[in-house]
Length: 141
Image (cartoon, rainbow, N blue to C red):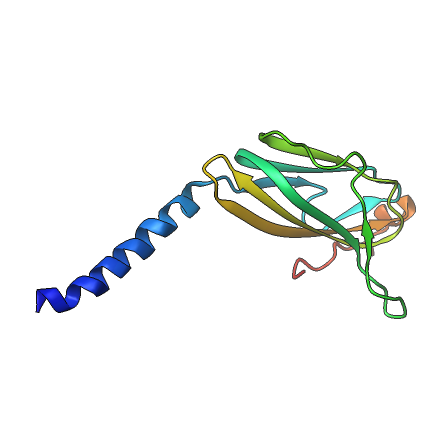
């Protein structure tokens, strides 16, 4: 009986052991702009902060299309991604125009594990930020 359970127990042990480091590697702790935030037109910096040092391997910033527009336009990070591990990453971009933006990122922790995530924000005219009708975009992106 025990010999027939051995392959199942070994598989279970490998699954548990294989997933343990995933729980330990760094997670995103904060972004600037925050997820769902409204920010003024002209934003030129996007920041990502991690709980533990990580190295960014991919960041894709996309301006989401309006109803009558073509598919989203990718916004390049000026100067590329940092090559070193760190708890924070600042990306420079050309001044952002009005619209909804989605930032998708991939990072690798010092332990070799990959983390992925996304956050969104909206860029609006400064006068709209003071408006009582201004509401953050949905966090369902």
